[in-house]
Length: 438
Image (cartoon, rainbow, N blue to C red; front, side, top):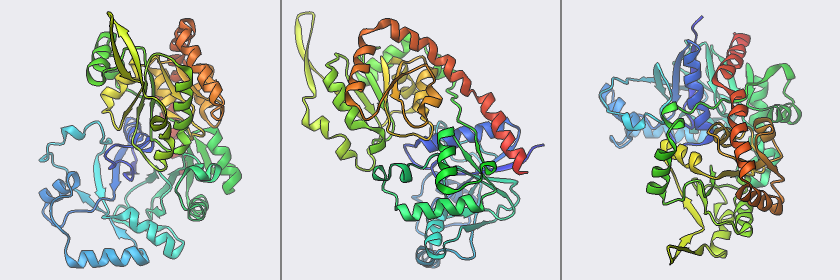
């Protein structure tokens, strides 16, 4: 039976996206593939107009004018007291008048879009003021409201499911900027009041049960899936080589790649230190937005020599050893993964570790962490290291660099391991959750 499933757009309106944005986007398409109606709830500023065209324009570009004094006044009140009576969400009329082709790779699947102006900020303030979840009014027709992030908010009349990806702020508190007491209280409140909890690994499931007291029958691990469109995943080697050499100036199959947010749990500092100690020839490429404490993580770039001499056809020149890119569009990112000698991803802790799965699915060898949830994802198809042991990371880079037989074995094993996390298996687990709560 087709149901109406609403997904939050909390992370989907971020310009450069996050791992949770990828999760939410993939979830929307998988729910659609299950035959359900998919609606997405955003929390943008909203349009200062009742005109449908202006409302559609405002969804894609907030530069349409200022809200009225009354709207500003209400939002100021909400910023202090929360919204004890809830906030109304209104449908955003998407007619196609706005040519939104350039947003296609970032947009979720949707049958309808809703917006509650600044709703996520208001919900946070509401929880701080009242220690309660805030109501969203106006979309009570939903069968299921699937929150992809721990937000202090719910939809009355719907079954409210929350995806809790990990408990990093509690397990590695020094790696995040979260207010730990607020976070702990919010997570416990969500666990108590949710109709069901979804998570993405057995490691996270165990953490949520042990640290938050979640009943075992109230939480389901659905894992995640990898679904890279064939037009990107099946690019020819020649096409990938042209793109990585032309767009990034990188030597095809002779560079090491990390991609993801630059933050403490990603272990960038040790990656850089290990790479420099390895003295391998190919550059280290880091693709990711600089997040909290990124200066500390990147300090080795400033303190170490970043250039080395290379002689080609009797001409000596310098090439950067470490390349830092703030962002790569998804099609180019896929080429960067395919063109790398290996992905280096020894994260300190992950709820799932999607980059590992993506790289394995594309046949790129992976060096990754032996801790957290990543062994569940990587199986025997990656080279495992202790993420706190820089020498182990260094040795793994050297082993990958010098051992063509190992690279070939990992390239062959990766796609087979990734197939265990297919869309079909993910949809089956997801439907079981929906059937259970309904």
